[in-house]
Image 1 (cartoon, rainbow, N blue to C red):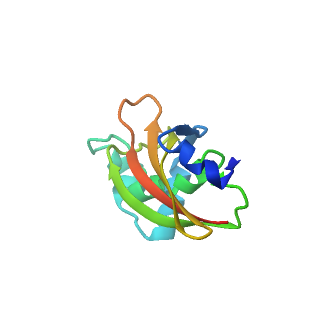
Image 2: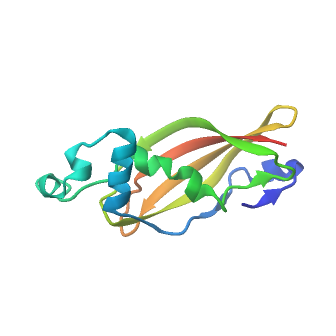
Image 3: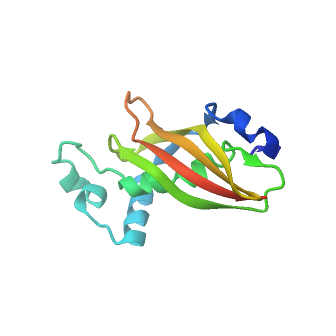
Length: 151
């Protein structure tokens, strides 16, 4: 993860910070998420029934794809130098645009949209995170994750 001087954080607002590597969303990952959350809806875990839906296959849970934001942002999202700790502060918004079909490859594009010092030594960073699906025109989602950084 790139570190920048606190005084330069605002210089990155409005700039695309980068794209993650492609990640394949396979059935095993989908099944593991279903186990963790208790969401065993057939559209996610039953390939035979899912073939009969308009999607023609199983799809990842929306919250599975959203839960990948921290992992996919790592190495892209800038952080202030002297960082002691960073915590997920939530999301300002998220819109699921289209489902992620099993075995699709996804990647995250991250743009810093805001950087504000909430309290002395506490910086709130807001990003625009777009989960692209390889070969698709529309993304899976557009989200605005918030990260609280303690310096």
